[in-house]
Length: 79
Image (cartoon, rainbow, N blue to C red):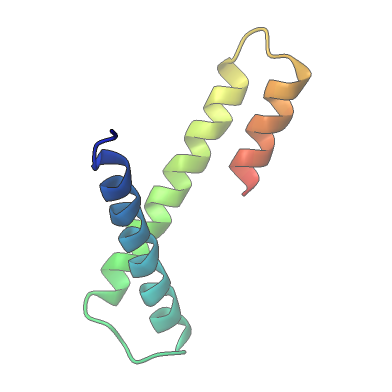
């Protein structure tokens, strides 16, 4: 039988995505202002920029990529 690690991890990631959604809606004015709105949006933006920078670095530093790996990497970074 499996462990609860995968479901617990998926639940935690779901909570993180949900909190990002709440802060985005609050920043857009669709719902009332949440506490720590500016700090949360700045942190989320920074994490997204770092993730994008890591993806670009991986593309530039990768050696011997075939077409499938290149297309998959670009697609995953754009999603």
